[in-house]
Every structure is written in structure tokens, then in C-alpha cells.
Length: 192
Image (cartoon, rainbow, N blue to C red; front, side, top):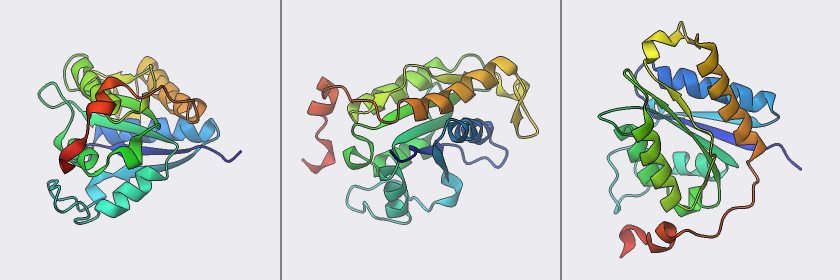
């Protein structure tokens, strides 16, 4: 059996992104667990605001091809107004069932304030609509400026949670998917 391939999408455009640091940490642990990894840094993609009539605009095909090749996907987001970031939403809009259906997905959220649970819930709902299998364990970094310094997670408990997410992405990369859920069978997309 080949090594599971884990793709991490960093949904932040900031140069000094705590989200990117956390996704890189999870990917490093995925490699330790036996997977191959790839970081999809959205700063490096030309992705205009999604238009269903221009699905291959900019670097959309490069993004969707990379996601489609993954066995597991880690989605990392900063928390903006209680939800996930617009760059991540835009990237997910370019993707769909072809890239996500029956894939294992891990979730990570980073907040400047308290626990970023709503962003994780929103991402879980999106993944459910795409008929993914979302890892029950999720990683959250509240008050990130106190937990990340010089490109590393300094809080040992948070570091352990983020590392575990990467490990479980490999462990569950080939899990038998659940039967389609109601949301995915009703989610016919923008083609109608």
C-alpha cells in the first residue's frame, strides 16, 4: 500500500500567519506518521472570487488537481467574525465532490480571542455537505499570539493537539466512508 498523501490548506493570507504555522506543524507530524504531505498556501494561488461560469479561472485547476490527489485534507483557518476565512471559503468553492467526496478531512482553527469553536462547526458543516469523513478530533488555537512564537507552537498542549491532527490524517486517510448524508444528497450545487 502506498503512503497516504495529506494536503494542508492554509486559509490565511497573512505573511506571519499562525494558521500556516499550525498547518505546517500538523503536516510535519503526518510525515512522521508515514504520510507524504503538501502545503497549499493560498497566498501562492491566483483565485479570483468564485464565479460558477468561470470554474477554471486563475490557478483553480492547479488547486483542484492538488486537492483531488490527496487521500486526506487538513483545512486550517483563522477565525474572522466567528467563522472561517474568505480565502478558504473561496478555495472550497472552486472544489466540490470531485475533490472532497469520501475523503478524510481534519479541521484546525486559530483565533486571536477565545476558543474558535464556531469556525470549526461551520467547516464541519461544509465538509458534511461535500460528503467527507471529518476526523472527530479537531485542533483549535485560542489566543494565538500567546501560543505561537517565532514560527513554532510554544504551548505544549496545543502543540500536542495539532500534532495529533496530522497523525490522525494519516491514520484515517483510507477509512471506509459513511453512507451519503442527507446534506450531501440534497446539495446539488450551482448547476441547477
